[in-house]
Length: 118
Ligand SMILES: [Zn+2]
Image 1 (cartoon, rainbow, N blue to C red):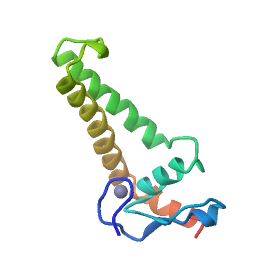
Image 2 (cartoon, helix red, strand yellow; image 1 turned 120 degrees about the vertical axis):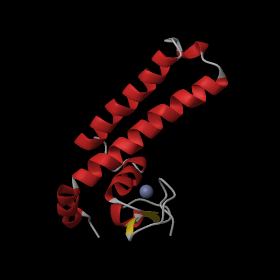
Image 3 (cartoon, rainbow, N blue to C red; image 1 turned 45 degrees about the vertical axis):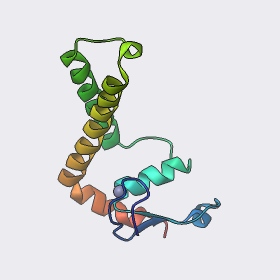
Image 4 (cartoon, rainbow, N blue to C red; image 1 turned 90 degrees about the horizontal axis):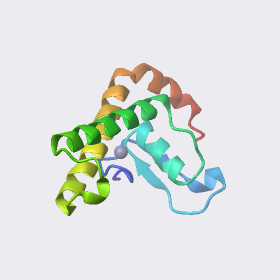
């Protein structure tokens, strides 16, 4: 199965909507991080984790550094190519930083495994 969030190979994590009294097909995930994202998509979790908040800040910083590099601050003035590069900087900055934090935080994530309701 392929992760519904990042398209990596699934590793046994999955979201089963009926267990949360929701409708829809089961979705595979590669990690607790992606499983949390699926759950949030389904509106069963609202608050981002501390690592996600830190990753959002990092992604925003990466987007800001790109804007600094092209000396622009008005997003409406970006060309389509500049907009795509800006979004890529934010998303890549977020995802890479979140993976880095998760890699350093393996013990805490393993401890969360017992909290999965299935
Ligand atoms: Zn994933």
